[in-house]
Length: 202
Image (cartoon, rainbow, N blue to C red; front, side):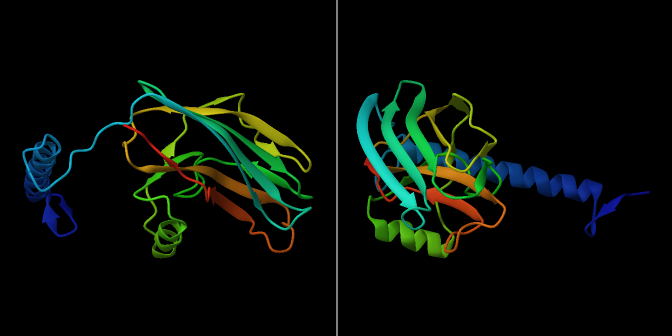
């Protein structure tokens, strides 16, 4: 007796999956050829080389006197990954739960854009086509579970993996979830993507 799933027998399903795997392998192989330069119409992607930038970014969310302040002091690209010196200052009257990964785009990390223009950020945000977050995997010191009113956290987040040279890196802070009712004008769930962007060098 055949077991059925979605109108296909298990044997039929295995064939479909196998064909899918073959097709995926072809696509991956084709992409590899293009990245090696075998497709003359496609520019090669180059990993950003080791570099360090003192950024000094400060951005705030909310009205003056009742805001959350985000800072990015420094970004460093190494041979094996990246790390950023960042901070959050809670100047509101409610606590904020720091919950990386609580929303699809809501992880602390980096997003890579084609340009440094704010118009690209706004347009992709409206269309729901924001780049995937290169999520941080380590924090020194550890993120607090809740950033209490009047409290601040400053530290270094980092992750392994190369970044594409020529792209523009924005820093993502997320997800922040209000503990209680947030101040007027602030959402209860916040993912902050910096207005500032840094152009990654080869």
